[in-house]
Image 1: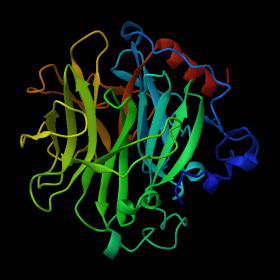
Image 2: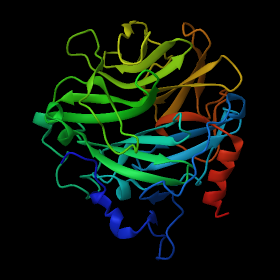
Image 3: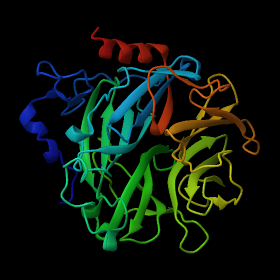
Image 4: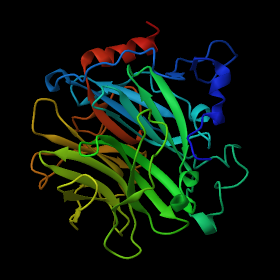
Length: 373
């Protein structure tokens, strides 16, 4: 198979638009969800808002308990409220080959559209009766958490989305031995004028590293074999969960090093597709395990927030640090910690999230949709 497919959910049989969701207890109307559409041809392209208009924030995340997509919004970058009361906005069982998603990332392209990418993986599928085996393929040959596919979605209004399951192992001869495809992120490459998709992978059960490719305009597949983006300089030490942000003329890559202790590190390059210089200094303040770094800027300032999944915490939580020089990182604590300015008003246990600036109007549109207005 050389193309991304929608066969896993039978979208064509559902008509032009479908709202996915689990039925409420006792039957009845499914809970409110985002809407999957076959194309965006009926949606008007919106211009990219000016930087001064982007004063609100959108957080995508998932939970281990649901393996589904969740969305929260904020007007100030400190207090976040889930738009669906802490319930999924898309059920992983409806959109993923493995009946679960992880590691959502969202960005706005130069065309004004929104691009959402996720890992197609359910790590508890056997326990929940969704798979007979622990993993899709044997752990001995393909490693822990092995999967084959990524999920790509595109929207112009944050409500209606196209959907594609991208079977990375079948796209190219170079990916036929793929052991994992995790944590995809998307970034516009001004040199190629294409959307670069980068993600964590490994060959069989080998060492994890970060690679990149490019997506087609419809955001349904990858168009060329992946190339190395960053490999940890120490043999047999993996690097995962890459997050790249252009700051000035530099590209800053934050990632997880599988050292002991591991935690987050950064590497800097003059170009988007490689040349990232290794810096051994850890950047997060946590004393327990962290992963999934995500960098975002506070509106109207030169201050950046580094958010990360503190998976070593009990219960799981998001941690935050601020920086303006990328040398000194001020610990803001975790969501709802005593003394922390970071608040999650109506949800708990978020994992592997990403924040994107949006307008207050876009935040209100999402809130109205899930309020039924």
